[in-house]
Amino acid sequence: MDCKESTYERIHIITKKDIRNIEKAFGLRGNERHEDDATSVGLWVEEMRQSDNNPVLLYKAQGVNDSTLCKDDFVLALQTPFQAYMLMTFGNDKVVCIDSTHGTNALTTVIVVDELGEGYPVAWCLSNRTDTVLLTHFFQSVKERSRVIAPQYIMTDDAEQLYNAWISAFGGTPHKLLCTWHVDHAWRGHLLSIKDQKLSQTIYHNLRVLLEETDKEKFEELLKQTQAQLKSSTKTLSFSDYFTTYYVARKSQWAACYRKGAQLNTNMYVEAFHRLLKHVYMKGKCNKRVDKCIHMLVKLERDKAFERLRKLEKGKISSRLTVIHKRHLASQKLSPLLLLLLLALYSDQH
Image 1 (spheres, one colour):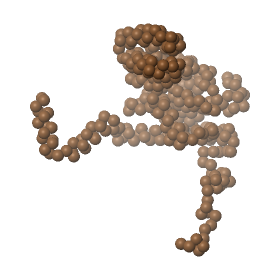
Image 2 (cartoon, rainbow, N blue to C red):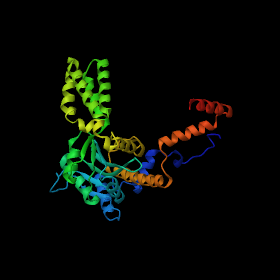
Image 3 (tube, rainbow, N blue to C red):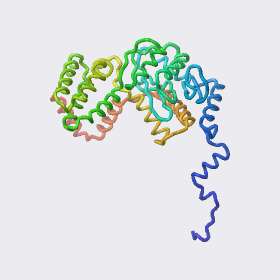
Image 4 (cartoon, rainbow, N blue to C red):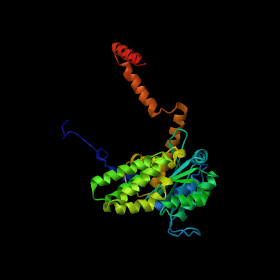
């Protein structure tokens, strides 16, 4: 078509900025109730408190006086009724995983492992800090809705406040487990103090063997050998002091031989949740608004509940069954002559 004869209107050259301006002018921001983030969150909380399935456990806006928290504190704890059911069902006598991400407002996530072997988020807390006092308030609000929860294991990162706050709220003496991923990450970071790269790699390999050893007697022997190796060279004395101070006395929290009953050795469920939230629901973008984060959390939990229902109804195909299915399809493509040859070889061996 000749460009001179073509006609177009303003709508044909619309841009993303134009769409955002239209959204702003007509109040079509979806999860944003107000331009001001704090006001938007407050409006959402009031709306939820009027609903039958209120997910708000605890809310304190920044700048509001409170007898138990600081005036500048911000706390928003969330748990849907279905999340409370999941916590009561899979939290007792089992493992509860807890982790926090850090930013302008930290997100603390509580996860349980269901009968399908998958992690399910059962509570969240958005807050400006993650110390023992504030986290205790969060866990107490969870306890009020979920009643008595007595897990056998609590798995966290290396932060003591997560475990201490849980004990303060729920009581009991669950076995504390350190997340293997966090332990490995800490070791690799401190191994940078060893300037000899080959020596550093050797020590890291020995530490991983130590970490994954499931026999207690073998573990204790390997631990003695590792400590002796670290003390034998001036290049490794700094790491030796670090390892002895922070990990030798707490071996029952990170060694595989002390956590057989937990049936897991990593906080991969929490890590997987954070990756899902950041890279799938937030599309890898940095989010500075709390109301958008709330919207993503609620949407994620709804999708997880639907996914769980679908797997319970249709059945979950494990990775082992997937491999067997692939091998079955591959065998169907084999020629009859080759199948007879394989059968003959099998008969000779047995």
